[in-house]
Length: 61
Image 1 (cartoon, rainbow, N blue to C red):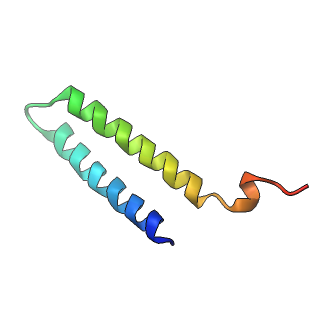
Image 2: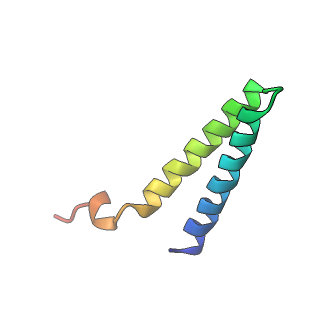
């Protein structure tokens, strides 16, 4: 695992914790929850691109 992957995973976990706290709060801030969900999805997409093996991305001809 590269440093970049590790940092993205770390960020993803922190966002997940923030999101769970925001969702469990008595005074829910829906804008904050949606923002955190979108940031989490963006990081998930970036991680997916990094974890895909190179052969699956561009098949050789």
